[in-house]
Image 1 (cartoon, rainbow, N blue to C red):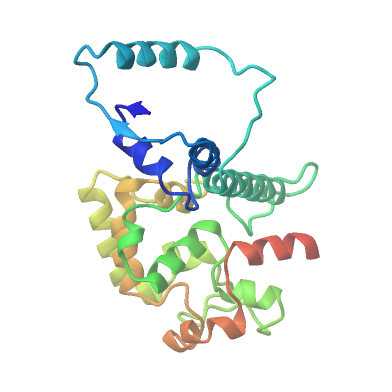
Image 2: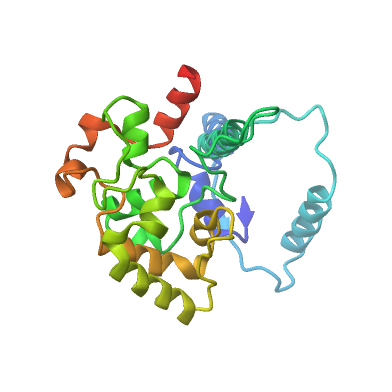
Length: 262
């Protein structure tokens, strides 16, 4: 059997888990059947586009077949990796739909606990930093970070006052844009944003957090800001981070559980 694809020939000789496994299994089964009948099977690579008649003809037929719809008589199958990708994509879609329904309730005041973001994919900038810092970034972005107002709502605290500046209510917007305790770090953040051409938040702007956290040029300044503050941590600072498993995992599974409880 001749082919100009070295990758295809390599895959056809190894029946391991991964893309193309079903086709590989068929090839190996067919080859074993021919071998049992005394027919020797050889997989042979040939260079492409150099005028080999059989190879050029096979290439033409393959292109014609690829442009046509698959006949109903042909069994369809999906590899394990493809199925996993589809499951993850469906999961992301369901999470976004749930956040939307939770954030925008028809006939009632908009729920401000959660934020609907444009995408749930991992930002390349975040894949290179320490996991605890990346976790705080995503918690704040999703609107489900450790704050006094949240801990008060789930009855972990008896008041909503900011544990940094004693303001009446400590929510995510207060920590990011208002808390007096982090004024110096906030000035640095705003300076970094301006240097990158990102508009700094204004009092008249609705939900500036969503705009900033979804602006790629703002990601690095935000990470630097979080790294120099304890925003997103509990009242005990770093100790609260280490005891995260005791308080909560603060992740998407938690969001789903709360949607069921509510």
